[in-house]
Each structure stands twice: as structure tokens, then as C-alpha cells.
Image (tube, rainbow, N blue to C red; front, side, top):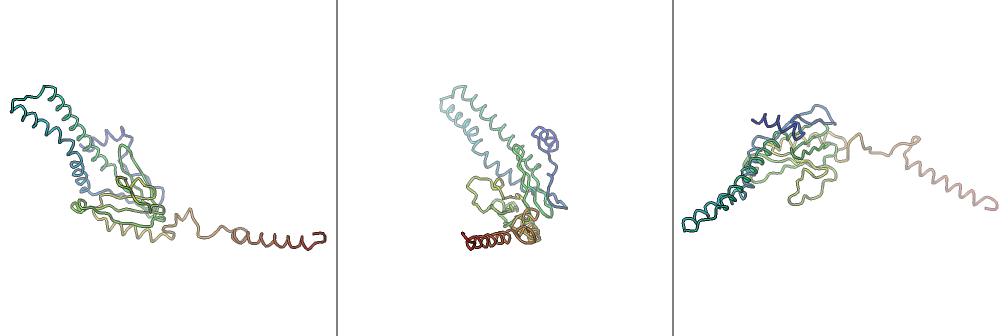
Length: 246
């Protein structure tokens, strides 16, 4: 059933279940969230949909109570109840399918140099974080996540020190990646920390993009060249002042 949904809706939504390509690093390892994360998402969804079903459930009870007291409700009230019930059922079915497909298309790819994160189906988001830029790796676990034995691993890179406002998805913030639904989050955190330490420029940028020294010009640095030009200009000014008629 799930395979059929993926084969039908994948091309329709222009998304692929295959792991994304990682531009940096070797020996890619693909991993996904724990199956317990899917149960956690389902439970969270049921909690969110509870108010949606409250009206369709309570409404007929009120109508029957009024009918028992000799005050039958107009026929159009039952029509409204049918429409609300159908809308709630369709919305719930769509939400359940979305959660399942998001789980199927949600994956992570880690190499020796970078981490690729992909999530979402309606709006698919992909982000690549290089271990050379990682500054902090932490495990985040709420009470309900502890109940399911899962946690999230948050990877902060240079420039991601800002606070996350309430209701804002940390995954969508620049310079930050969130690995959700991991059963052994501490082991994954230690693995990322080890690869971060192996990089000679951890927290300072990629080795291909940055250098610890200024570029050399004529055997010296640009700063030394500027100092030489300054000294020569001063000497030339002194010679001009010392010349006759200067």
C-alpha cells in the first residue's frame, strides 16, 4: 500500500524516494528516522486533529437531546453535520497520508566531510552542512520523545547562533540542520563530533574556501607589500623636500 502511494504521488509531487546527492565527501552513509518516530508523528497528529472532530461528534448529541425534549432540529442542521463530518474525515485522511509520505521521503546522507538533510513532500527542503563549519552538536529531546525513545540532533554551524522563535522550524534556518526521530541520538552526535574534530578548520569554513594566511605576492604577503610601498613613498617625499627648490 505504501509503495503504491509512493509510486503514484512521488511523480505527481515531483519528489523521489531515492537518497539525495551529496556534493562533498566520500563514503556516503544513508540513514532515516526510527520507525518509532512515525508513531510519534501519528500521535502528535491525532492530538492536533482532536478539535477538528469535536464539533462533528458533539453536534449530533446536542441535536438528539433537543429532539428528546420535543424540540427537533431543522433538517438542514443534519446537512451541515454531514458536510462537517466529511470535511473532517477527508482532512484527517490527507494528513495521515502526508505524515506517512513525509516519513518515506525524509532521509539523511552523511559523508566524511558533509551532511545532507532532506525532508518534506509538499515543499521539499534540502540542506547540506559541511563538518568544517560545524560549531556545536546537541541532542534535543522532549517529554513525548522520551516516551518513544527518540530524540533530535541539532547541528549548528557558523552563523547559526540566533535564537529560534516560537513556532519557527529550526530546520528552515540558515546554517542549522535538525536530524529528527533518531533512536540512538547520542551515538550520532558523537560520530558527527568526531568528524568535526578531524577537520583542520572546524568552525572556520571549508578547507577549499578559506586559508589561515594572506595570499603571497612576490614572496611576501599583501600586508608586507603595502608596508614596502609606504616606506618607499615616505623616502620619495623626503628626497623631494631635500631637492633644491623643493
